[in-house]
Length: 357
Image (cartoon, rainbow, N blue to C red; front, top):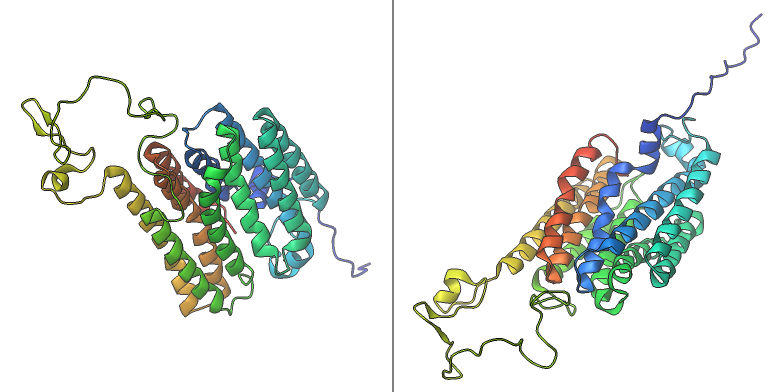
């Protein structure tokens, strides 16, 4: 006899692809650049403790992803029923347990990098949990998310050198971009807002110019704190004295003519100002950041549909990588900048398989 009851769907074990979707693994590639940019801003190349900071950041970021879906499971059941929790592929208990375990792992890795790093990581973890459990849908939501990204960059600086102050300008720039992306994301499910994409375009323009021109107290592109040839604080490095000559004329090198400023090339030979390779790299990365973030924002401005708004959010997340790389170049570490920028194509490839939003 037919009782009219719906058949009970058998439960199945969550697959790796389900967890990859829950944790948004394609967005993971935007995380290491925080610590790398922080290390560069503090005046050092990446070290073993920088890797610990990256590991801590990855764990805390994924904890936030799991906790985000756990907190939004009832809303997602209406707006995104295909997500792992409302579709039943992963249980709410498993998602919450994963968030707790990943948080503990992140704090443990930070502790290995030192007490100061643990202090910053603890503040970061508290911000992540506060955002997901209470602040997300309040006016303070974008500010909390911006604070989390800023703290993530500072974690890399503190773990590498123990210093925070030199990295504050870079953390402020990254936080401003995060604030903009989070503000746009608040309307990604229903769309309809042109003000947020317009504001996002304005923020992108300001930040790209600030990074390209080294605003806000950026360190010089000269020798870094850990350079093998850094100048002594008491004067120029020791070595053979240069040939005497008029103070307003460069010293002559035997058989080579006037010594030219390093990295200036033909422009310097002609007495014309020209960018150094490091400055050129910074400008290129700033342009890549601006293009990555601005193009989908412009489309969302013209047509603020949910689909295009989500693409604008995804573009803003992917734009963090060239922004982090530009910040590293801005701090005088082009090598770190290139390593960070190399994560962009990998992130793009994974984004085709797993959405970053």
